[in-house]
Amino acid sequence: MHYEEVETLLRRSEDYLELANSAFESEKYDAAIFLAEQALQLHIKALLIKYADLRIRSHSLRELLYRLGQVFKLEDRIEEFIRANRKLLRELEDAYIETRYEARVYYREDAEELIEFVARVMDFVEGLADEFERGSNLQDD
Picture 1 (cartoon, rainbow, N blue to C red):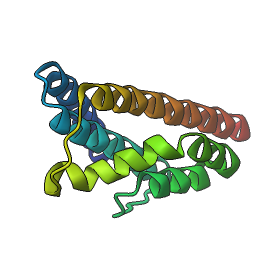
Picture 2: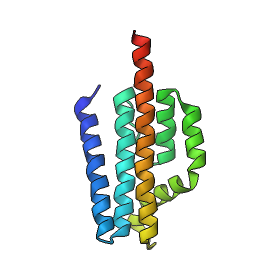
Picture 3: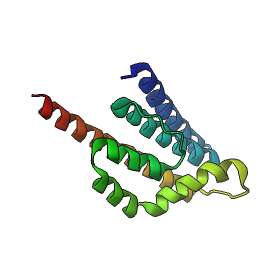
């Protein structure tokens, strides 16, 4: 495992989420959404490296989640999660580009919803990682 690389990405993910919350409090909603999306991307990418030594260059959250499902052999759970949350995942993916290059304006409600969603996705993937580790430990016994 590439411990330092994983730890660096997870630390950055935490930092970006903290910065997203600070930007939100400062009413900088575009920046808050961008930073929250980046935090989620880095979090998933860290897990892909940790559990499969897999580096994906994609910025698509749906693709990254799907690949994580493959690694954990939980494709059905991931696909169900993606279907149930397609709208918010698309909004975050669109925000990756729009917060940097487009004239779209984001509002408090947008940022609040998306930042909360990012935290839920992180909790979801951490839960999957815990399940995967427990399953791996059972196979090792």
